[in-house]
Length: 71
Image 1: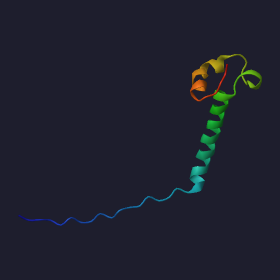
Image 2 (image 1 turned 60 degrees about the horizontal axis):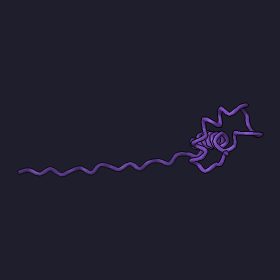
Image 3 (image 1 turned 90 degrees about the vertical axis):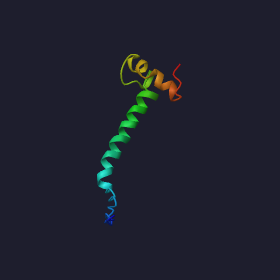
Image 4 (image 1 turned 135 degrees about the vertical axis):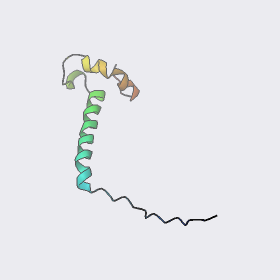
């Protein structure tokens, strides 16, 4: 019975991402989170961007789930 020796495979290490590649995505998602936080937490009454209760009704359950009181 013949045995063959396994040749070692070189392991390639992942290269770090440059900050210049991550920064635009971080800014985009940060702005997106702030807009979502505004609509879920603040959009009603005096600070409302849109008239009426439409946005409030769309995010009503999410507002209570995240602990924002609204009534």
